[in-house]
Image (cartoon, rainbow over the protein chains, first blue to last red):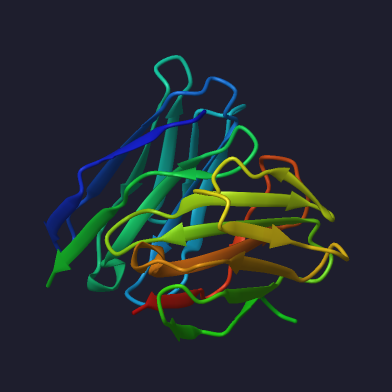
Length: 109
Length: 115
């Protein structure tokens, strides 16, 4: 079955800097790669997703890149703000979402 | 409803007891997923339904866990003979279709504590 690895497990950045989170997956049948943000005690919420027919997608300060050959995808957050602080999960889906272990992002003012 | 609803939000039970966790998906969503999330971990897949049938139950840890969705809407996750290791947040999600590339919306979860 699908296996998703996520790095780093924690990431601390200064407000205004960029943050990058990387994931790798194992199942070449995966064709959907969403990213979820989870604040403490709350439900995961989708922030951006990418499908296998594109290599990059951008939404304001957030972008995702996908390399299907290497089976890895990344989340890029530019101009980070304190409210970006949360745990971020990547996921890959051949038929159901398989999640990475999460990255705790802290943005310091 | 406006979103995925899970009840109860919190459940404390004694070791060995039986519990039921309920999920009410977004109206019209045919796919429904159950996940388990332990502290500091990502959501762990348990089972997913396409309509009334379990399309994939490969994530259920053992035969103490069972889930149903008899009318293709509300789903119940049932845990028999609970153990302390079952303590976690149980998350339900739904999506519009069973296609793998549609957004999944999560409920707020049920925090299960087995004492």
